[in-house]
Length: 312
Image (cartoon, rainbow, N blue to C red; front, side, top):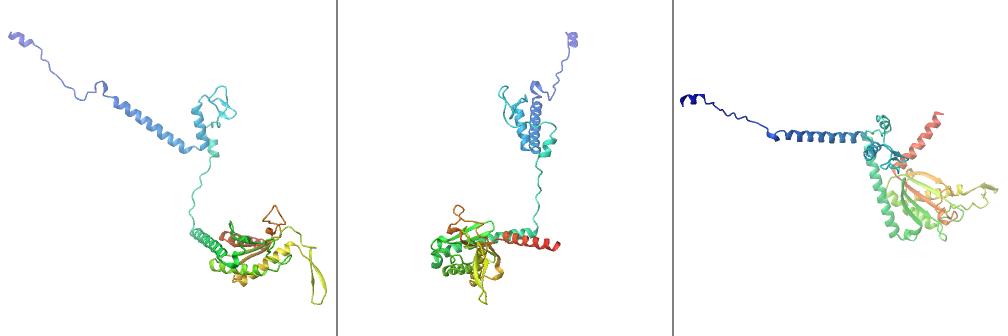
């Protein structure tokens, strides 16, 4: 018995820590899938950032139709009915990059530009206020209310325009003359006072006639020696004379002379009622209270002409 005990083998148990078992490495696979997905996501974002709309449509078409079969209209998902959307851009993309719009960097406005922008906003507010005041005056003033249907107010790209138009039985001027009717003088003086109170903007006055030719095409006058003469006279002269007659009444109403920017006669070249060239509506006086853009444009135009003449 004692000898048998000596020969009996000794068994030692060894415990190995940190084993993996059959599922010990599964997290690595999941992590690899996650990294791959993130890489694909960022690759997609990068592609969206460097391609234009046409290239993206081409890529979209390619995924819809990897076979590349095309018809007259582009890629097609049908082997028989060819057609579809735009062609898929091919090549290395250099051609598409050449046609891609070049991004325009934002230029910081200079202090002078910012000041001009503020001035134009303030100018618009003044003209809007003037428009409201004129509308109120037409409604509340006895002198103006009677001519409500002959006073047209509108905001244009050049400023606020006031048009005083003829009516068949109530003309602004004597027939074929630049002589203002008494009630027209009242209207112009009333308008002048409101304009002076509200805005310092330059004023342009334009005379218009209808398409009826001036009778005979001339006017007769007598010199200081009693000799009779004929002077060529058309609607161009008549419209300019009427614009100047309106100017004189605006000055009498209080408008400063240095606030006048332009006096023009356009005859029947700009008709208000184009379907009826001889309509009374076409005989009118147009008063434009110019905005800053119109004032600057007029100044630049005149300056360019003077510079050109000086250089010649």
